[in-house]
Image 1 (cartoon, chains in turn green, orange, yellow, blue):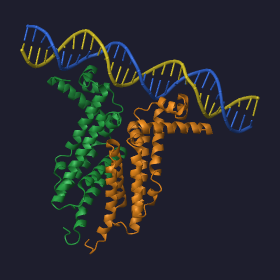
Image 2: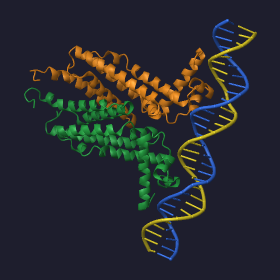
Image 3: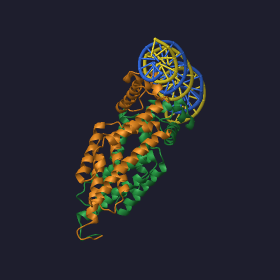
Image 4: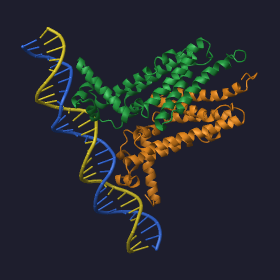
Length: 207
Length: 207
DNA sequence: GCTAGTATGGACTGGCAAGTCCAGTCTGGA
DNA sequence: TCCAGACTGGACTTGCCAGTCCATACTAGC
């Protein structure tokens, strides 16, 4: 896998994205290597040339690819949770992203196929969750800095709860088609953060 | 499929539970019909006798089986959310259930395999979520009745948010092994419900 | 204890899809 | 220009596994 020609790199990328697209559209369960080949106009030998471990390696690459997208799709809002309108705008972006995505979650799909067998797949998800939560927590800390959130609140725990709400909301949307749960979870999470302040400094400063 | 002998019913049940167990232990992806046969000391013809549509029908039956368990495992607490200690006790039960369950979620696993192809699988999940949410909402309403929760809160939306938190917490636990998110989500959700009251009827009534 | 229908064993088929192989082409650097 | 190594095509092997089939054994009601 050393020394990729420009052409080679392009082919590899084509295969990767073709697989990702196919999975987005049909799920991982019925993705066959031949499907990918047909879609990307490549051949078996190419696929195994760029992904020597075959299907498993390809799937792992897709997982990484999709994991990166998840956070990118939330930018720039996710990295800039510095005011309530910013939080709201982020919330809207998340809802919108998953509304668009429809019923198939490539990442969930791929990791649940690779399963616990592959430590690699676990690692991808773990890191994604970690980064995601960290960015939310940073936002919480910032708001604590400006006095908009009760400083007594644990930012990591709050971020964890919010993240769980998002994941669950998305999961429910995948399986039932309803986006309400995602919205409700985000709204409740943010409302809770906002409310913390009024509880921390209750009577005389209702903003 | 009419006229099941007692013996026949037992065999059918054995196959069903054997499949469920195997899926719990190894995931659905590497569950082969022969695995189930070996584990349950049955033969191909029996399996197809009781599940004429083969693998797919069996998987669907497993999904139903597991869906029922989910709510049952939360009883009696889930049906009796009538005081804060009761909520707390329910919260503990949920956390405990999923902590025990480990890294494989049979239901998520099965439905993501059956995918969107089978409308049946969707239906099972949809109904589960619906019932689950309804039971939580009932608890919220009850607490509103006794004045422990702000009556201005939408019970269904609150229940939706809480449910999303649970689902996400479980999902994260499946993929990362951490139970913190589930705990955080439940705690935050319940805290939010409790706090609503103090906001609704605060000291000096600023609303 | 007859018999119709139920239950069971397990060999066999068929197809699909992952992965291998080799022969042939292209590319870039010296 | 030359050649080592990258790139490509696609036939072939291999193994697995869902689903079929038929012969046999059991059971329940009459």
